[in-house]
Amino acid sequence: MKVSFSELDLKQLTKISQWITNGKWVEELIDICQGISLSVPNQEFPLIYAGVLLARNNQVDNAIKVLRLCQSSVFGKTLAEYLSETHSFSKRVKTFKEAKPYDAWMQTEIYQSIRAGVLEMVKHFAKQNPPHSLDEPTIIDIGPGNGILTVEIVKQLQQVYPLRGLHLILIEPSEEMMALAIQHCQASIPMPVQITPLCNCTLQSLTSKDQKIIQEHQPIWFINASLSLHHIPRELKVPNMEILNSISTSLLMTEIDENLEELEDGSPELIHTVNEIYSNAIQEVLNINSASVLDKKSCIDSFFLADAITVLKNIQELRVEHWISNSQWQDVAKYAGFKVVKTTPIVSSIPFFTLELKNQPTSDGLN
Image 1 (spheres, rainbow, N blue to C red):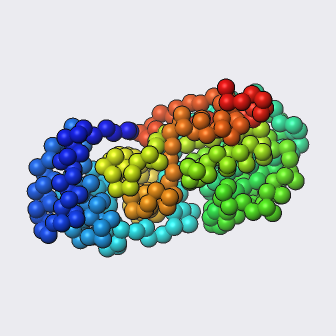
Image 2 (image 1 turned 90 degrees about the vertical axis):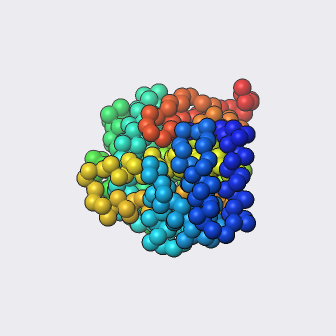
Image 3 (image 1 turned 30 degrees about the vertical axis):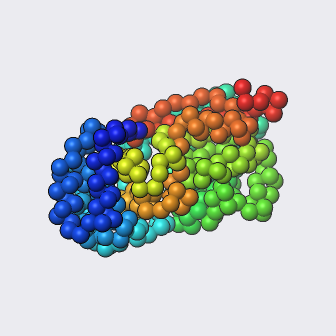
């Protein structure tokens, strides 16, 4: 969803940023926005750009007035509603601190496409890489959420091998999510399963004690990381991937194929990318028939809007969402000592991909 603004586009958008600094009457800004015609398809973007800049500049009331004029932008309309309720350009709750909003996300077509891609990757990997033992091989799942996908991964493995037991190491920052993941795994995995929970932590915050626990359970069959590694800041991606390489010879990862790291704070390119991605995500939640209006709103507010506001409001180092593209992830993996076995795009309204990585001997270099 990369966008390229023409020189004329940027010149026109500069009128908006200049007004944010020096303007007095929001009606004047609205006239400026409505008088701008851009080369990009989204002709409401000047309103969205102005609304976000106003919110970043603590002019929330003016931001609401501008964003309420959006007719087609789902993100613009949703952000206007959120600002009207909160009167603050900040997230109300920590993303997925509670597990309930996750349920609506799992019903979206985007999630179902991701799920299918993950399971296909797991099947491909398992056929080529048998476990060291059928009795209790160890798998690490980074960011298992409520554990439902973890269960499905295990059942996929059981279709390939007659496993007699399994050991799961779960790395999850949310206590409520971890409790649900353990509950789902114990109730739904049809064989003996030992679970080692590493809670209140992320990959980059693993303690020496946590790493010792992992080392005690070697060998690790593989590590799964579904939509969890993009939270690692760019400068820490290689060191953290090196840690994963030292833990297991195989890493199966799923990520968004989008690059935020090269986009400057408050830039038209960043705001346009966020608008396009989160408009699609929010629309998918709104399209769900089996979720209540309250559950949809909870998912949107505590997940998508929380993430979007964090990206738009903060300097790059504090964005939390540190997306990079598939090709950039492959470069990171190679520098960390992995080789790419297979990568597959996931077809959905937002670009995702799966990436199967395997340890390569140091002598192989980066070729």
